[in-house]
Image (tube, rainbow, N blue to C red):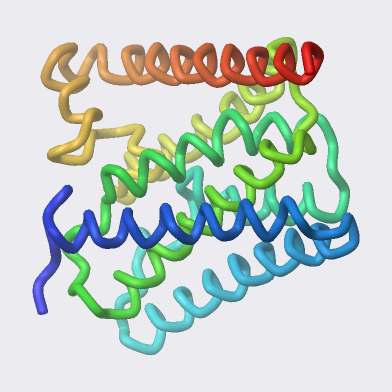
Length: 232
């Protein structure tokens, strides 16, 4: 079977399923003891890790492994950020989860870059479920106020990007890949709109502007949540 298109019936059904999965996860996590919540976090991390290992093995076995295969997207980094946060939580991992992993995975689900993968195939299921788990992990922490980060922590995300973006950009340029969508946009997504509006020269700068705008919105929402907690 062929792939799908953004917001067609297949994509919409996946989004509905993931929304339901998110609601159930939030409910279960909220009414679980602290010990069981920790088990939940570890379970999500190991599911993410083993699913990525399974993907790598699948690509090797089916002779599809290429320069595109390493987990070098933001969501790929999310596996390791989640793992570190699960066992050794810090303000840095909390900030990276909130500013990079959550919006990155949510945007990927809304505007997937795996539309060409055959519907019903391993990569199709893996991509949707993988990104859904990323969103769920961060969402339950936000709901339970277990993600300790403030607007002043944004420098941690900036530092992470300063360290990771240059080598990935060079990797993309050398191997003609497009990890983190740094070198070109994905057709049919808001990234394409940025590219069309600002051209190749302004693409990265406009992308940085969008990221900062998303961060501002996220921290405004977090501030509103904290203010409500105080008034309650």
